[in-house]
Each structure stands twice: as structure tokens, then as C-alpha cells.
Length: 491
Image (cartoon, rainbow, N blue to C red):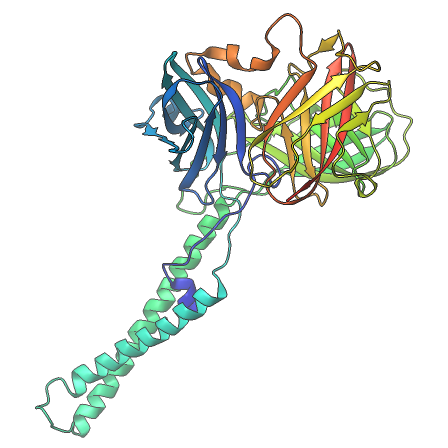
């Protein structure tokens, strides 16, 4: 086992998410100047590591796309390295792919520059970079390396003995007693040296493993306490991620008092009742002191709720914190401001192929869904809101500055992603990235231009794995926030 630990070919892998729970890939639908681009970034499994990039050009005429990674904030954000040119697909002239090295933990951006018939445009994609976990070596590879290690040690010891016992003997001469004794001494010394080297390598490996383990992403811990009068208190604590080991310097730090507004709120809290995922609340607690959020709960249906809290640090690094709370029957307050709720049958009783959802006020929400859904497939999820007569509402309104919000949740709780019409990136980080581009902030939400708002919204996303999902979609007309609930079976 020491040999296996010391083997330099032991590969440490990471699985993971980024800000969202269990949803590692990043999707963004935005404009690089005159060009509409649908971008997918698959973050690296380790840090340093290679991020895979796919770009679908939805505007014709793009000849070349270049990509470069650089820190989202700090001094390094001003000094971009030489950009790499993405490769155009020989089968599809509108599809480009490439890869980039992400060299450190923290908030990064992938800056894309598109050149074509309509000129030049720039689009930046925020990418939170962090290793998420480690994976042990496969048993077969470990067994093979162990056998090779034993063979290597035996060979070194045998050669040391032969060098003393037989190397100076004439051809055909049988080693005498002194030569044999010297060979045994040499073999003992060689064995001691090899074992000592393996022990030292094992100590070095354990030190490096501890250093790497300290870099494996650990989200802020979230504890929820319900107290009178119907007030939910959320305490955030740092479990010690990226605290430097003795003699080492942390290149990226995290705080619990540096949050920035995202859609006008420091925290977006989704409370989803378990196990049926039949009731959802989208709420916005207030920061009352460093690391403490508080919220007077609205009237809620009783049950056990899983809590997903989205926050964004001043560095642009987003996090989704997870907890749970048992909520009794509460008189509570009415929903106010940007708070919203919705309910449906438990997912166990619902069809996974439904396309229409009836809303309490007679309105309907429709999912314009494809025939099949596959994991790891980037696509636009389109939804349409109509009134009781089947017409587009005349009073469509923006919900927190967007045409809509969506939450994609796996029924087993392993996936949660809060997605906007722009994509799965946090809008606060996206705004930080776009401010540095020539295109400015006017491209933040291309879907809301014009005098009349459309009654249709699309969300760029891709299911990270197969399984059963529930999708919560929120759109607004007048002062009413509607919540449509849809189910999907992903192959």
C-alpha cells in the first residue's frame, strides 16, 4: 500500500459541481458584438486542469473564435495571455470547439472573441474554478503497479547482491564464503535504502495529498433554525476550505461577509418540500450580520423542506449552500416583493412527458419540449405563458430584471441549478465579466429588448446526468409571479 501511495502515476480526479449542486457544466447564451453565441464550458476535473469549450454560433458569418482564460478580478484580470483559436467543425461551420488550461482555484472568465463578416465582438463567460473531490486509483491499475513495484524492489536488491558477490569473479568461478557474505550485506543495505526511500516517498505523498485535500472544494455550511415569530435564521460558517497549511500561501481566500447583490438580493433561497417536490418557495432572506441571514416566513404548507441558497462573493465566485428545515403549519405573512411560490402533484404521481401546467388564476404555462431529453446535451428550454383564453398576456413583466427564472432539480436531490435566460452563470459574475468588454452591459439580457415583452422565455442548460427531474419555471405578468412545474425523464 505504501508503494501504491508513493507511485507518481496515481491520478487524483475531481468530480463536481461548480456553484450549483451536482451541475458542473456552464451554459451561456449571449452576444459577442453582433453575434449570438451559445457557449458550453465544461470545467476541469482537477486544478490545474483543462476546460473544454463548445460554441454554437446562432448568427451566420463568424469566421474565427479565439478564447483565453484570465482571472475575473484582481491584478491578473488585466493581463491576458495569448488566445487560443477554437477549431471549426468540418461537419458544421457554425460549431467551434477547443480547450483551455485553468491554472488556479478562484473566479475566472473565458473571454471569447468572434471575428466575421459583421466585424468583431467579445463575450466573457464566468467560470468558477475549484477541485471538487478526489477519486481513488482503480483496483486493477493498483494491483498491476503493486506487482511491478515488488518486482522493481526485488530487482534492485538482487542487483546489489550480485554486484558484490559475482561482478568481480572470473567467468565460471564460484563465489567463496566472503563474497557470499558481502553479497548478503549489500542486499541488506540495498533493501534498507529502498525501504527508506519508499517511506520517504510515502511521507511526501501524504503531505501533497493533504495539501490537495485542503484545496478540494468545501461549500460554506448552512444551518437553518426556525424561531419565533415564524422567523428562519440561516447561519453560514466556513468549514476551512483553502486555509493554508504551514509554510504554504493560499492564493484564493473566501469570506462570509463579502456577498454582492444578484438580481437585487444577497441571497436567493429555494425551499422545496420533500420527498414529492410538490411545493416550492423562492424567497430572499436579508443579511443581518456577517454570515447570518434572516427571513420572516410566509404562510407555508407544513413538511420537511430542502433548502438551496445561492450567494455570490465579491470576487464573483458563486456558491449554492444546502440545508433542510422542518416547517410546521404557520400563519405566516403574505408573499411580498420578489417572493414566489408554486405547487403541483408529487413527482411520483406526475407524468414525465407533460407539456402544459395549469396555474391557480386560470393562466397556463407551456413547455415547448423536444421529443427526447439526453444528459450532457446543451439545449434551450423554452416556456410560454398564456392567459385563460390562450392568448399572450398584455401585461408581461420582468421578474427580477429577467423574462423568467428556472430551477432544475433532480428528484433524489443530487442536482440543483438556478438558471436564467442568459444561462447557468450567476448574473453578478456575468456583469463583472461584461463590464471589461467593449460591448458593455447592454448585452446582459438580449431577450428583453423592445417595447413589448414576449410571453416566451428560454433557458440554456444541459442535464448533467440521467434520471428523473422536476423543473420549476417562474414568469411574471402584472404583479403576479406564476410558477409552472414540469417533470422530465432524462436518458
